[in-house]
Length: 133
Image 1: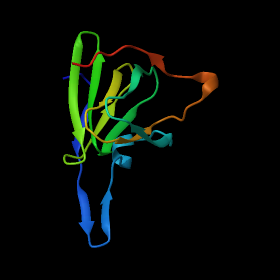
Image 2: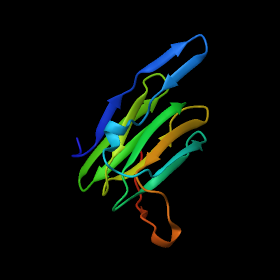
Image 3: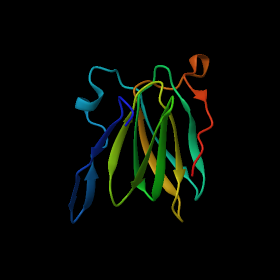
């Protein structure tokens, strides 16, 4: 286990209209100001991420498809399978390298929240090369 990583099982509320899924709640974020929410799609076999941040904290949830999230800090490594059948939210603090690979046969939809918005003049993204087994 890597210190600071938080994995939360999510509750889906369903009825005849569809479903509601709360991925990131205020209690998870604390006093941080609003950052940004984004949705990214990865094709089968594609990898997203391969970086770390010095200031940014992120929360990830695969809402459709299947992915493997790999987290690394020094010699420590975690691999977390995320998919639509087992909805989880994974909180990744600064200085944890991360990448997610689509391990399914269809597109993977990853919903993410960051506690600070992207600013190209003050980027907080530092590339790494995470290997997948």
